[in-house]
Structures are given as structure tokens and as C-alpha cells.
Amino acid sequence: MMVAFIDRHRSTLGVESICRTLQFAPSAYYERKRQAIEPELRSPRQRTDETLRVAIHRVWEDNFQVYGARKIWRQLLREGYDVARCTVERLMREMDIQGVVRGKKKRTTIASDKDIRPLDLVRRIFHADRPNQLWVADFTYVATWAGFVYVAFIIDVFSRMIVGWRAARSMTAELTLDALEQALWARKVKGGLIHHSDRGSQYLAIRYSERLIEAGISASVGSVGDGYDNAMAETINGLFKAEVIHRRGPWRGLEAVEYATLEWVDWFNNRRLLEPIGNIPPAEFEKSYYTEQEGLAVGAGLT
Image 1 (cartoon, helix red, strand yellow):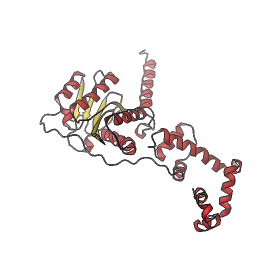
Image 2 (cartoon, helix red, strand yellow):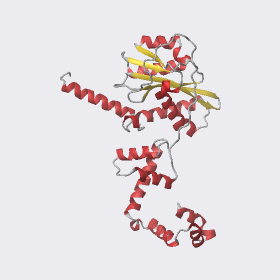
Image 3 (tube, helix red, strand yellow):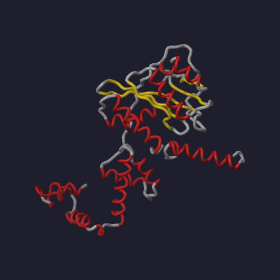
Image 4 (cartoon, one colour):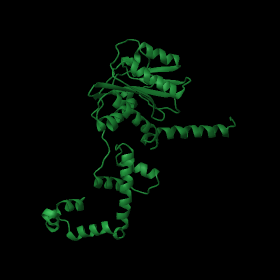
């Protein structure tokens, strides 16, 4: 960065005067210039840094420019690079790139004032031992030039995989029901599943409740009424807003949000590294589970 600054201003200010002001030896500047022309003059560390810069920038670009140093470091380790996290942090500072920072989530669901609602079967313990044991559902909003767009997600707690989603212009039960239908179609659930949400009226609507019963799914609703009632779903909403909405806006309307969400969900499920499941993507985590179960079945003589 120092060399690039000197290059930009040397024609008007001169190399020596710039170096004197910056307290940077002219000989160091000229040595860097020679190394740029003759790579063999670079030290082993400089050559390694150059290779890592290319890899870091590639990982950052391939992942929507949302990864910070920790996630990029994890991805490089997966690819076989022998690199320390502090090295990735240093090079990212030199390259002037960084990951996204999540902001606070605003609540979008409207609490129902119904006295009768499903029990809280989760009690803020968001843990599952297998896929299709516990789903959590929530939705968020996106401001566009054409008005608000609402995006609903359903997440499998076991792997954090987004199993259903839908975007719409209105905040109604139709939105959440469409996301549920997509999840049911994708996962082919056959009972033994809990569906958890907050106390939003969209999730307590008669049609939504009837569809859960029809699919053999047990409904669960947060009992306290704050953000921790559905913390995992709100975490996914926060990632969506930080990694897509806040970074890539402004948004023209529903179609633009739908397309961006489609891209993000595919990336999130199949390529995004998630620390709670061992810094691997959700799809890979589920594949490992089913492979392990098949091995156990073979060992027990069940197949």
C-alpha cells in the first residue's frame, strides 16, 4: 500500500520527499519495485503472501464478499492451505477487504392476542439429533422502491439448512404457508417433527395450524414473547439481512429480492461454512449424518 501511494504521487512530489514525510526509506521503495519486476528477488514470506492474497480474494469473492478473516481462514484450511488465522487477518487489512457486520434485527411478526395457542415444546433449547426433528420459522422485511417485501424462512435446527422460504409483498399467512409447503415438499416429512415459531399471528392462523396437523407435525410457540423465543430463526434472518439485503441494496422490488434470496439460500445451504456444525456447509453436515447412519445400519446387519 505504501508503494502504491508513492507511485501515485511521485511525479508531482518526488520519491525522496514523500519517503521523508512517511518515514519510509527510499531504498526500501526501490527494492519493492525491483521485486515486482523480478519475483525471484522476493523473500519466501513475500512469495507466500502473494499466493495467499490471490486465494483470500478468491474466497472472499466466491462467498458474496461476506466472509471475514475467520471464515476465510476456515475455508483455506479446508482447501489444504497451511496458514495461520493471524496471517489471513494481516493480509486482509493490507488488501483493505473485510466481511459484513450484522446489525440489530427489528421484529416483524405481530403477536397474536389469542388465549389458546400451542405449547412451547422447545423452551429455548434449539438442539436436534437428526434432520427433520425440529424446524424453526420466522420472517423478515426488505424495504424496496416499490414498498416492503417480506421473506419467510424455515430452518432445520440439526444442520441449520434452510428447507423452505418464500417472498411476498404482504405480511400474511399466505407467505408463511407457502414457505411451509416448500419445506414439506422438499423434505418429505413423515411425522416426528416439531415446528417452532414465535407468537406471530401468521403462524397461529387456522390454515397454518391445520396444515401442520395434516402433515403430522407438532406445533410449538414461544412462551415468553421476546427475541430469545425463536433465537435460531432470528439468527438466520440476521445473516440474510447482513449478507444480502444491507450489502447489495437498494432494491427495486419483489423480483429482485426473490432472485437474490434464491442465490443466497443455495450458497448458504451448499457452500457457506457454519461454525456451530463444525465449519462445514449444512448440506455436507446432513450428508455426513446419513452416511454415518448407513454405516451403522450395515454394521448392525439391518440392510
